[in-house]
Length: 155
Image (cartoon, rainbow, N blue to C red; front, side, top):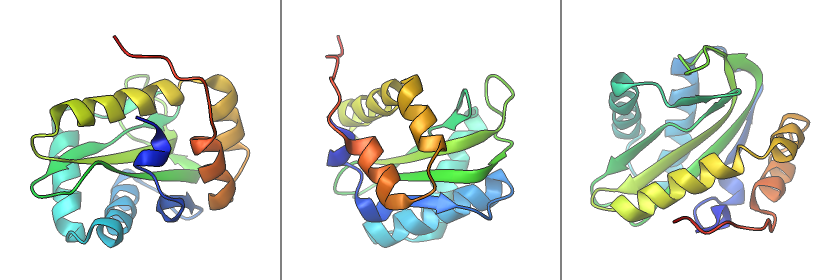
């Protein structure tokens, strides 16, 4: 699974005014609602319920909030590049500025896990992360995220 399979150019955001985790998750939920046709509040509640189990802040300024929605047609991603890092209760206790929201259909275990693994692997690439942090243009961010990169097959 490539990120281009689940991420569209319109689902990449530059967020100059986000100041906290709640505002961030709200904006991501609103964008996801326009992409999926789901209610933004339902998406937000799903993401917040997952966050209540433990933060999806992976460290190094990166978070991958995620959740499952009944009836969703397929895995959907929304990416945000924040101008100012926000506290996210990350494992390394550092604020985040690169966030990829993933939504998957209920029962899409393998696809959901593949998407999470792909995003996590991609965002561990130091040169990509540096390039993402150097841009606030959504088109450029999309191009960086979806460029052809050698993929490693998961075991």
